[in-house]
Length: 313
Image 1 (tube, rainbow, N blue to C red):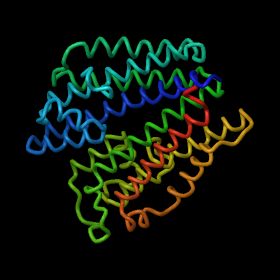
Image 2: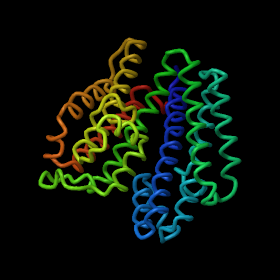
Image 3: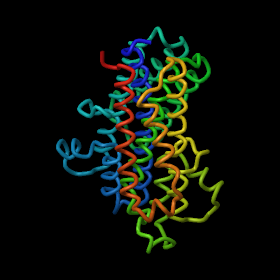
């Protein structure tokens, strides 16, 4: 496969995943703003920091009003990570790689772009926001369904999934990094109470609230929340799950192309070295330090994939 085509599939998937992740972040921030107006500004700031656009927002707007933050994250053309921006970039990359996609995947991506472009044509009112965010998640799910249901399990499929899981791991790690102070990284504080609204926000941001309840019941524990989001291999948005999938996709590419790569070695190291320690050891060493190191390693893996598979000719 040409490096340009591989890059387009990789970034198509990353942008689609980013649009869904941002929709979940907005939903979490909106819930806080509705229930706790006195802390709404701080929560919106954390949402912007997680999305990596806080500086750009402050430069343009200054204060963290709900309407401005939502509009910036949903549809502001000056924000390259706004949902309107990333769905266009996803569609543009899909068009570049059109011959490597099934008709069903292309139509799902194109429909996603057309539907959300229409929904985001004007500022979204608070009353309409939940429905708009639901539509964003549903459109993303339809693309994912078409991808999994119609694509050959070939190199194009593997590049697409690599983009998905790299972006998803980055998002989960960023949420943990921004919220780490709520997860009480000091061992001395383990076992003390955590604000229910805040920890539920962390879980809802990665669609893990119901799954956490199934596994742990009503117990609220800093260790268990962190263990669930980092090490629980059955949670599709945990760091461990994403890393295992990236390792598997890179291994399939190595077998298909008949050569080992540095990216494959890095993915194996990411799984074996950073995700093999028990959660207590991670807390003892500092959750913030652990997550920061993971983010650096994940970004380095993305760059290595681009280099090994010649995304830029």
